[in-house]
Image (cartoon, rainbow, N blue to C red; front, side, top):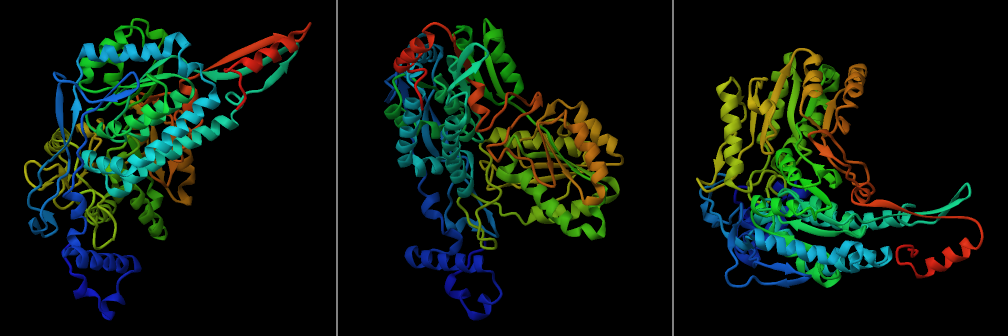
Length: 591
């Protein structure tokens, strides 16, 4: 990221030793230099000096409104802040400030309950406009929503960068992947016989089966994927005919304000409703009414348990939960044989991406690495070298060396920084060391949340990070003497989302034993690759305190729908009667 003027480097000698990608980046820097008179290290100042300004909005009975006088508001600050080019020194930032990028309504209990009344009116015991609409018409309405949302795409991407620190590539990917997920769900509905239904004869009985709504669904999404994770729940539930009450996350919530207008234009009044403010203030009162029929929750298991207990009839509450994970990466000894050097290199690359993609703030991130004790020093040396090469900066920064955006960006708030420091300090006090240069340090001053990743080694079972989900740029490496230690960790742990096994062909027998034992512990076993949710057409599940329910293009549609059966005996004139009924029925209308 060192400043470099294009006119000083565009020589034939330099061009001959740089990659094509770097050359193209230099050309781009030159153009920007000519247009804006800036060095290439400041090519994104036009973005960084123009933070978003998202006004506080509410939605009442389908109408987007500005809050009236007396409604409490709070300022939302960006996790990352522009600086003047001259303040950047030796690839670091001398000072970073946090800017106000919007405002959010802070609802009280009474206001939250009023929103719930809008949802209940829209559901109307299943007789509301949206649940009574034909499946085909609901699909058309969601397609209108996606079309209306196009005009907000760039604004939403920018907000994701500023509020939660996603780089340009990741923020863009979240928006586009979410839209693609919804379109794939629509195509799945058209293929799935439980949605695109036909008559089937079973003995003397004719049956028509179609999945449909449950009722009012309360959705609570996370800060790290506020669009993708939340909408995977909410839009699948909407397509089935449910009515939604969405709790906007305290961090990462501004992007949802930018979707309200599109929802308002596409859906009947009250079909989707938004609540913002303190979850502890607004959510328990909603649950205590007993009017919530389903809960889609992505977050911590303790918060989920507390919320579920508030419902007066928890046995009738349909649950979909995505919770914590402590995903393991297991490196088998055979991988370190001289003939497997390339495979080891690839495995380390996968582990680094799995540990630090979006700063490790993913439920699918690799959160603990197990390495053979006698190979640990070799592994740590190679691992650390790659970590230290990662570009650290603001979401819009471009590394001159790689031509790519920052791989490590600011955390969303100081609470996350403090928690990382607590885990690091605890591990160090019990014998671990930070083995990478400047690991755990903060770049940009006291207000900054830009943390250099910390690689901790050796980590033992006496340390908090051995058990707790860090959800951030701290990587614990655990040396093991016997594979039984690793098996015990997975078997006896609280979580069961995913595991990654890194091995060569020579280790297939050991790897297969690990795989077999973990097939009843984890929802996904990855071989020589990082953990992840994609592809979205594959079931994404977990066990224990990691999940309840299955996410995918197909399975998400089933989480908040139930099959309704229409049946008749094939005798007398029943066939004619039922055919006539079907001509008028919205529920049975063909796609």
